[in-house]
Image 1 (cartoon, helix red, strand yellow):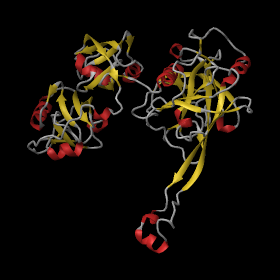
Image 2: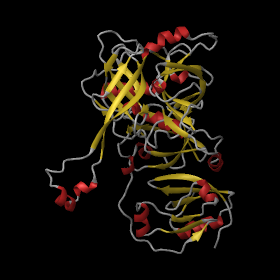
Image 3: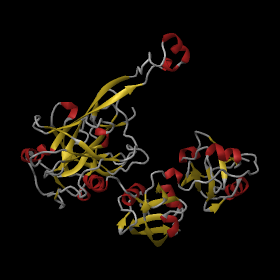
Image 4: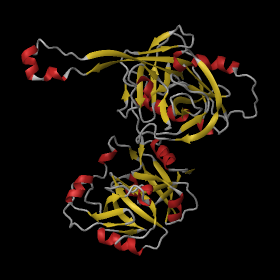
Length: 500
């Protein structure tokens, strides 16, 4: 049975996936970060608690229930746009817009993080809600406020709300989520299924998780926990054994939608950095390096003669970007970012994104298994990454007969194939026209429409040179540098007999 990743907000009717819409911010709020209570020391791991009652009594008032409503309009009957239909059943004035509207209700949780009313929650809890359709209820179940959206960031699934109260609100204390360890005791607090505020306990099962829940443009660094998280817990609090906020409950992995002991929360350090930018600037400005990053697999580590699989492999460098100007190249393996070890490509991507644009940062890379240092001034992440490095349609090249590499057919590039697969003229190599589903190449990730630009560190300009290098290769695993769908990356394919 296939495992599903489900956000744990509840919505009556249609529930859309977390979108990649533009960041939204309202004007009129303070231009300084919220005043937070922060305790950045590590949790006391020597303490042995027999009850968490006193902690829950202190923390529970900071966790709120969020109700949202949105107006959904169903499209009108298409016959109303047919002139023949109008001829017999009425004109413009007779046939009014017959689209139907209904109100869709959603339920989630949130956390009060400042005494003056700032609340953290998930973007998907309030996404698409009507301007006046968000209500916040305190834990007593009686006190209710209208809430305004300060800002939303779909790429991290974080949203910031603001409520106005004549009294100071019970703000939670924030911990430093970078100091968490697997095995730490955690408590999840929220309003699952709308039954009322509930608490569940567990431990941190893993750190730095990322499963593509937020899409290709999302930034994931989830805390994984076995504390029960269910629908309605979205946006609720994940706290440590001392009642300090360490994360915002986000989703569960489950084969059937029920809790299966695998829940995810957004680390509070990430959520806090997003909140500060939304409150102060009304938008998110992320650092941008200009490289395509890959995971270093054991096969790639062996091919590049690396000591282990840590670091981030540069699959390609986009033209006229900070990385290109600094001299980075495809095949570099970034192992250190500003003095911090890079564990993998997702880790580096997150660190770059969390660094302010125009910041000068130091990178250490392994190039041909030798250390090399770079100083790079980051740019700001553009809204449209797909537009970077794109060129005009290519010129005609002579077509050649395809050859195959154990289930892979190759051909020369020409005008037609360049247009078909949107391949810019700067890309040179051999076009992959077919890949057998049961081949090693398919398992390695090679796809039709890809262009092989390099074989075992040797550039190939066309079909003939690609065949020549492939036939002469004596490697057990052939390393290919490939262009596909606007990006370049490396892959390794076990060497087999070449068909002639």
